Amino acid sequence: MTPVQNNPRGILFILLGMILFSIQDALIKFIYQDAALYELYFGRTFVALILLVGYLKLSKQEIILKTHYPFLTILRVICFFFGFSFFYISLTYMSLAMANALFFSSPFFVSILATIFLKEKVGIRRWSAIFIGFIGVYLVLNPDFTNFDYMKLAPVACALCYSISMTITKITSDKDNVYTQMLHLYFGAVLISILFFIFIGEGQFNNFSDPALQFIFREWFTNPSYAWPFIIVMGCIGAFAFYFILNAYSIASPSVVSLYEYSLIIWSILTGYILFNNIPTTRTFVGVSIIISAGIYIYFREKVKDQMIVTDTPNR
Image 1 (cartoon, one colour):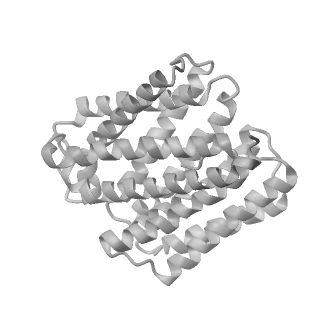
Image 2 (cartoon, one colour):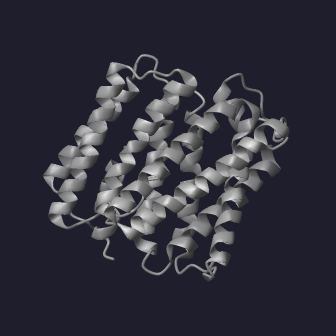
């Protein structure tokens, strides 16, 4: 079958992946007071790594760790790791809907980086969409410049780091296959998490009252019987979410299924309301609408120009 013939199945897969990611984010928000950030990161990634290796073994695919781009691979791993560190930190003080809405500023950053590093041409219409998209980000942030909390920028920092990672992926994908690149991300995350355990895992620097900083510097394994079942479930959910997303992009047209990644914001609103009674403000809804509209417009301009910068790789 051609990719177009598989678009309905690809859309179903992408919707399932986004639902699973919203559940994973909700679990992080639910247990962040009972686990350290990098304890959670380590457990979640280690479980996902085991499942990925198991899948490759069962499907009799070769496990390839060698990369043709060692420096870019290391940079991509670091950007991806710390990008989602910012995102997980934001969940300690921000609603699921707001965090994910700000994360979806990543297509704007990808377009900007593509002009710099990939030498792609972005016309005035897409530059206008990027500018309008950042107005949506501004509305969601609702900054008070007399006393602005810079921690609100954590999901935007995640979007920037993620965009750098995806821009590098555009370069490395010509020789490194998708599973090799995923293995790099997982192995890298496990290794960096272990380094954090060595240096801050005993909670010796946890002298903060702020919940977000406590999440970062909290002692590991303080409540494993409660936290680790959630962490293991997170790892399984994350692995299956990536499985659905990668399959969606492999069996369907990337420029079609990528639009449905915005459903993550809808699932986040529903999950946040059901589990945490978070109701987005009117201003947030307006900002989210602008972000989504700008992202969709960029997609259509890329399709018109036959120049898929943002829409040919997963957005999460």
